[in-house]
Image (cartoon, rainbow, N blue to C red; front, side, top):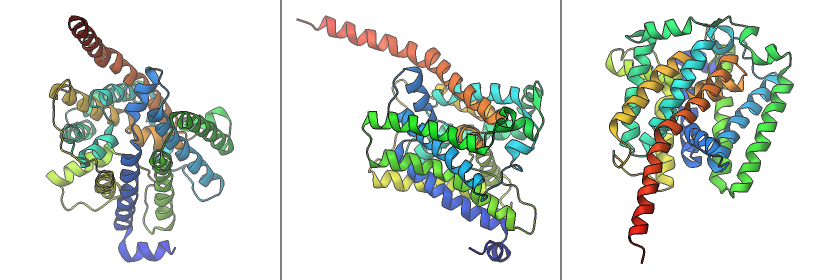
Length: 366
């Protein structure tokens, strides 16, 4: 493929946007078909039910790690200039942001990418939560919440370079990173076989992770063949959500970017997946899922994602695949925060419901 010719003809911004659109279509379709969701995986983990939801997330994560590390070892990818490794970062922001994001994703029943996928499936709860997430992310980036984000981030700062590279800190190379990904893939396959997966779980989980690696590879190729400086980047949803919000509200003339192409791609891909599986239907608020819960959760996720420097996909999988230290701290925070939210919010609600059902059954017993 003649990258230079494409870039010269269409420009870096348009090439990145088209690439984001294509990769978004693939991510949205396969994430929808496989039911890829960090929240669901976290719930299964803390409930000690190591089933298909945990296996899907592990397979996607492991595929991303293996593919990214394999591309690096093959000389087809260089990630040292990625923001997650080269720029100054914040460990305090990663930890606090990850905890808040984890709390929020359980309250909204989905992380940022999952909300976008569910919105395309007709879920109005997810649509509202996604809009509030985008508003909060923008407010945290350059609005009223920005001073709080900056203050928390300043508690514990880490310089860019080897200090943010987990492999460098451990004194190991990318071969060990590849081996680590293979170990996690073996664990995912174990849980998958035990759960009795169908085709879409296998194909969707692996393909979702592969899109993360392809995003790194694609943006690296554009950077390597561009005439102007281009930042290498991967899949993420917090920044692009805020970017789309501002484009709709105030900046219609802003140049296209990878993230601006990614968001509609994921929406359309998920819509195609829902139509193929005959799963599209309108859903609103009802039962235990009250609107205040979703609003609070979306705010926590929006602020947490900007504080941590990424969402469950952007920091957790995209940053985790290149072994960025702050991404791994964020990922741990998300798992802990999700477990806390489930313990504090959902389990107390489930216990009275179970008691009520038991009492009802007893009262109707002969």
